[in-house]
Length: 236
Image 1 (tube, one colour):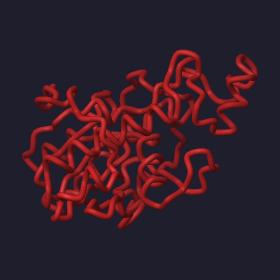
Image 2: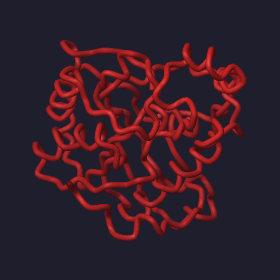
Image 3: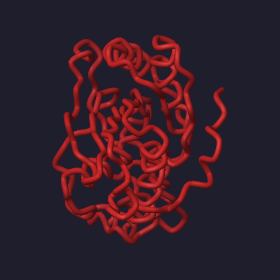
C-alpha cells in the first residue's frame, strides 16, 4: 500500500477559490477526478462514509475499463483517497500507467456519523430528525458524530488546493468519492451546497476540471463511454 505523500497532513487551510491565495498561479492545472468503482453497499444504497467497503465484481470491471480510457491522457501524478475502494480503483490506472498512487486523506468521503452503515430509508425510521436534516441538505448538520457539509467542503478544498499548488501546469488524476465530486461540481458551477442534487455521479466515470487564477472550471462531466458493458448508476 502506498504511503501518504509527504506533508499532506500539514496543508494550509487556504480556500481553493480565494483569489488572494491563488493569484500567483499563472499556469493552468487540469485534474481528472474519478469516483471509485461500485461496491455492494452502493447497490444496496447503504451509506458508506468512512467505512471501508471493497469494490464488488462490477466495481473491479469498472476500474479496469476506466484505466483503459484514462490511460490515454498521460497523467503526471495519480492521487487517491485513502479509503480502500478508492485505492483499489486507482490501482488499476497505476498499473497501466506505471505511476505510484499517492494517498490524500482530504479526498475521503464525508463522515456521515450515525447514518454510516444504513440506508436513507432506515435512517428515516431510526433517526427521523437526522433524516430531515439529510433530506434538507442542512450544511451545518454533522449527523451527531460525523462532519457537517461545510466542514467536509472545506476539507475537500484543502486537498485540491494542495494538489494544485504542487502540480502547477500539470495534468493529474485523482480517485475519490461521490460526495467529493458533489462538492467540486457545485464549486465549479456556482451551485449552493444546500440545493438538491440535479446531476448524476456515476462510478468510475471521468470528470474533468481545470484550475487557474480565476478559480475552478468544469470542463467535462461524467465521461463513461468506457462503461458500456458494466455501467451501474448508484448513490453515495
